Image (tube, rainbow, N blue to C red; front, side, top):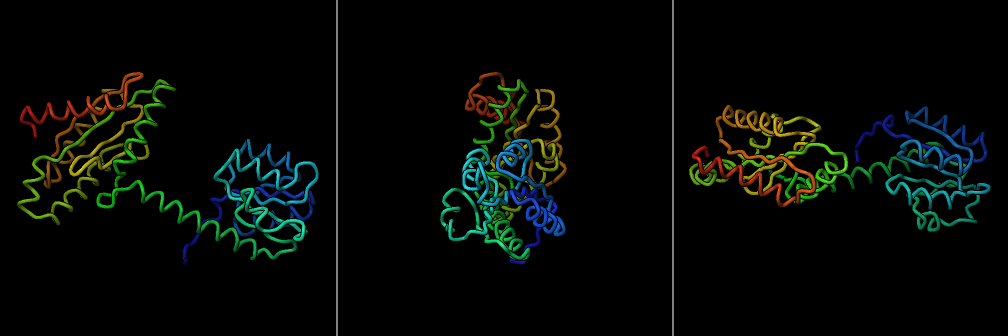
Length: 286
């Protein structure tokens, strides 16, 4: 694949009732750069997993009391996205399919070389990267690089639920490019696509990074979800966006916003922002 991975970002929990074996595996993986923790039984492992986030669980199968199979079942139920590799020295007792069926990603037989375990971890990382990339593409607009309309509705509902639960402010901005059809007719669709791409860049550069979320809402329509943002923040962000479009010299945009009120329906919030947007357009601003 040619993909390099930063092992330092991965937190591994090694579980083995044979303490010396667990220590050897932990030390070897630490030497490769992984963040490694260890537990010497299933119960201790569960406690650690409930108190800290791990990206990998590497567990022995044959352990007293809570064995590896039962541990994997519980962990996958409580932490579905964790990656799991099962280890055992008794390959006749458990088949590969047994551990896969309970939720493990892979299976390794003791004794093993560290490069064999590293290869299995790396394969899982590659698969995770591919899965994450497909998930990202499914919610991304391929022209602007912003999130797409499908993700907009999911995200807005999620943020509205959070605003209700935590009593946080929430605002929504809608943008519409002015006379975009005329622009397309005059300069052609390639220029129109370039204008849409530039619009995405303008929006991203004028909202709070890693706080607000921008979307391509329709053909030449965009949306921005402003989290923990009251009317004052919505107004200042709208003004900043408007100036950003004016400075670009490519296209101008009409902008409207609405602020969420408790138990407001999503459709009502969108309709309120849309009404504000077209109020400006009808006043001759767009």
